[in-house]
Length: 231
Ligand SMILES: *Cc1c(COP(=O)(O)O)cnc(C)c1O
Image (cartoon, rainbow, N blue to C red; front, side, top):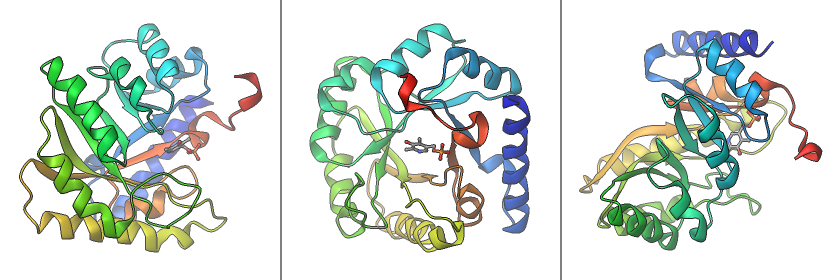
């Protein structure tokens, strides 16, 4: 079932790429495995997945131990500063940086280990009160401040769109994140690239791909519904 789902999602990404004249190889499917047991991750791995997304530091570290070491791990959830030290050097990308304080902690821990940690800036495009992320109008400022820190490199932007019935309702938010990334590219800020746009989840990843997502984060669409009660 997981293998079938995984392949279906890839096929849908292929369709969305064709529809928008994009290259399928330019989109990375991140398998969001939070709350799922290691056996499920192994099934996804065997289906071909090499990028996994987790939202809790402890769970991420536990799973890294138990799975093959050719997996790229993505931290996609809100990150507390006191937990940063546990994941530095273990992640391919931290998607959820939305404050200078957090960036400084990542910078400090990375520089101590002589590493450069790749990050994305999480933008609250839809201005939802319940969501983390910096507002569109504050993004450039935050990027400028983070760009001068050692041990950290901004590779792009991430957003979590609202939960909606019709994914078309989120198209404008994906479009706006893409536009913001182009505005930032045009500022030519040192040590900043906008090569990654992480947007789109189970409900709306095809629309996100059509609007330029380079990374989509899909959990339910691969593993089925999450049961938070068994955590
Ligand atoms: C849980 C989660 C996802 C995956 O959500 P699904 O709707 O299950 O695909 C994607 N991104 C983030 C940040 C998440 O926390």
